[in-house]
Each structure stands twice: as structure tokens, then as C-alpha cells.
Image 1: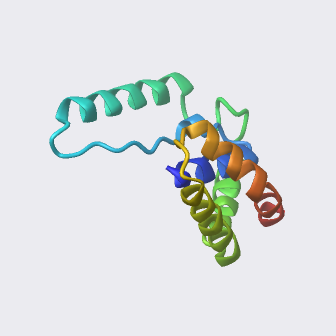
Image 2: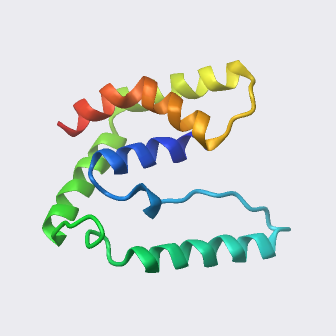
Length: 118
């Protein structure tokens, strides 16, 4: 779930609504859960409308920001830093909620994300 926190952080920093991304797990034996996850996420996206409209951005601005985000996510230094955060979270051994992960990503990666987005 750490990747979820990182991607939402990058989306937020690029000015895109982080609620446009969701990463959930469902096994092959959880068909009803899978259907609910997809249905709920589809409804959320419909409510947000086209990418950029909710954020007040033109299609060109959205494209530019997504390209910056893509470049940042392929940055080796950021990926290594994220790996260190994930390792530290596993080492702590506490129950990891989305909030705890997001706080740790914020604490440890804000500087790197901001620098990478320029």
C-alpha cells in the first residue's frame, strides 16, 4: 500500500486530485469485493468529472503535469528513497493504515517530490 501513498502524494503535488487514483487488492475468490471496488471507484470518477475540470486545468496543463509526474516516478533517487521508507515501515511492525503510510511518505519524501517536480 505504500505505492498508493506515494502516487497520491505526487498527484497532490502536481495539482491533480489524488482521489483519482486507487489501488486496492482483491483475490480471485473475492468477486463480489472486486465488483464493489470497481463500481465505487467508477462512481467516484464520474462525480469528479473529466481529468482537469475539477482541478481547474486546461487539457494542456494536465498533460504537462502528468508528464512531470511520470518523469518523477521514474527517477531512480526517488524510487530508492521510497524503498527506504517502505523498509522502515515494515521494520516498525505496527499495523499500517493508509494514514500512517501517507504520513511517513509526507515526512520522508516531500522534499524529494517537490524538488523532482521543480
